[in-house]
Image 1: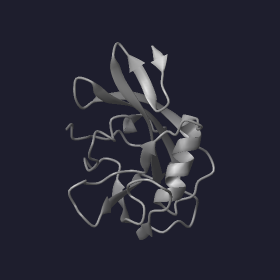
Image 2: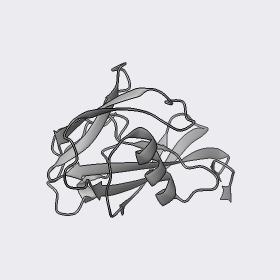
Image 3: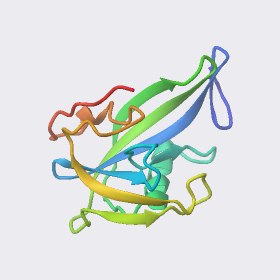
Image 4: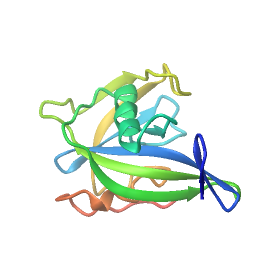
Length: 155
């Protein structure tokens, strides 16, 4: 396996390195959607830059894509997603509990340099048991300590 600038090459296949974070408030999960509903409900996530660790990328993505704040970040696990025979993604997934006093719903204009820059995300809370996340982003949510076991829609 050879580490590349933006991914891992494994047997001729490229795996882009990604990070995602699930932020909860009690038994509820913060999710967002774009003004365009096609991308569906998501959690803060994105590419790991060549100079970042997965943890640093997760924190950066939350800062760029939301106003959510937390104190402790916990590693939930890793997943592989394959989109074509030669392209896939290697995800590191994290979890944190939002700080006390965080709004239940808000909108945020994305900062940073990515493709979502200046896009407005609309955040809301949803029960952890609701099968609402798209793109298989909920596949490790059952590992959140002390939370209700969640069900997910596989895409």
